[in-house]
Image (tube, rainbow, N blue to C red):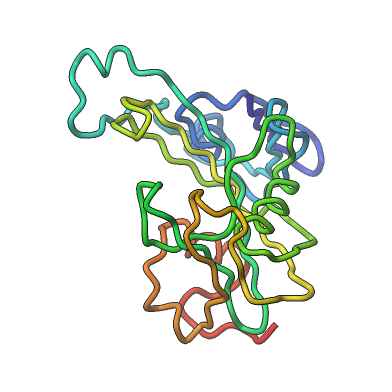
Length: 230
């Protein structure tokens, strides 16, 4: 369960349980609030996303829908089981390079590059998941993990598990790597086939997933201009 809380000046003004398929920004807007900075409290199972909010003039927002993927039969659509996955990722920059991981053929986006990260385990905090996943996927030790943005995606379609009503909740963080080393994948045979520090000059040619530019901008870094060398 994920609880969304909105604060104004440190005072709680809205609280709701994130519905399956719902985006917290849309849920807040539908209740009359616009989301600002976000913090996470607690571990998966009792996770709270706490947003700084301000009133919106015209509240609105659609109720969670179920976008259908191709190839589902009517029977599959009726019997599909909802599945929510909470995952944590991090923007890690060192010496003007961004730490990226290449998705393996075991995923639905094999060959594309993503931020290091992955699923949050039950009872694990998102920050702890970032530290663990970065170490497993790249061999790097990171500190100062901070939540910057929340992205969601909802679809109903075929996956390797079969017909699925899938709700992805992606928690995008920044983290600092005090002593960067050559990236090495330790979790061999999983969702990551390669990892590397990618210099800015090469980034434009990298096929990245859609969340990478958004996460980089949320970290306060420009996506379309050279980064500072730090």
